[in-house]
Length: 440
Ligand code: G6P
Image (cartoon, rainbow, N blue to C red):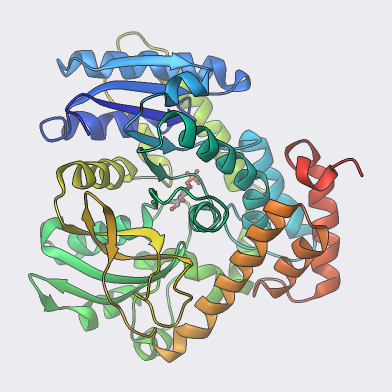
């Protein structure tokens, strides 16, 4: 890798782009970025221009010689890139709103990355990411793919299983959000907190948590019994864990575990939201419209604080610290999605897991975590089975596999309901599921 880094960001018109740009500015001293290529599709052209111009102003204000290129030509952006970051949303927020609303009609959770929503987001996204990887093989075979597109775990799984591109890392802000929340609670610097993460994306546990190497797990578990503290991200409204449950669990759940250990309450909550304020996608749509109005202001040249109302806080930190650690061979510890390779004994070696890793120039080296504790092992294994079947359904366009994936998902209680949801959602997302509508 040279010292004139080129990064291509697919889905560059995203409202999150200023977050990423802020991360590049903060770490410019260690990551000499020269070219940032923001790529989007025709439908996202206007947003790309608005947010791209803000990105240019941000670098300019910071006095950094970074060239920002805006393009609809993905291949041009990929040519010779050192890193490719992906943050696109197939079908835009309208598709997410359908993922959230349709399952609720059947009494099932409607959520961006879990249950039916997660399945359909995977079905829409995986063929596209595999296409991107194909282009990368030709145009930038040595580049690292750093994927934030959800469902990040399944997307990583699909790239590892259905392509021969090995330089892929999946990234989520939940682990860093947990670290930051705990650091705040303990009133210590983030750098002093370390969590041993093991599990899957949005299904990750903190097996232990340390400050300066000393375990503070018991104290943190008590903190999590307070309803105010059971969620570390803005988009999941947790309601507090039962003290008896969380003490006996003995590990730290992530915010998304609310959907599994409080399924009934969360379905009720999402149903109520859908009937009143709107689903999360509908709320986010309004937030985005406001954000883009702000981004248009030619006098704005920083990331506006309003972006913090989104669930993706700290993405930039997580993303840019990862890219920098690969580039600088830092060998520091970060939680990412990567090939298990024996790190978590309870999961297949060749599957994607979310785990604490040492980040080197050859990529993440997962730390050895051993078996998952018995109380959480079964759920994680079941979700991995769901993910693998879902990935296969996405690649093959096999309807039966889609029904199977949803039926084995713990959030769906019946094969008949699973089939009904699949039928309605396949129809609703028809334009984005070409593999399911192949001409015979
Ligand atoms: C969380 C998740 C992300 C997700 C985001 C959604 O933090 O970890 O994977 O994309 O929230 O936030 P939003 O504001 O779009 O609901």
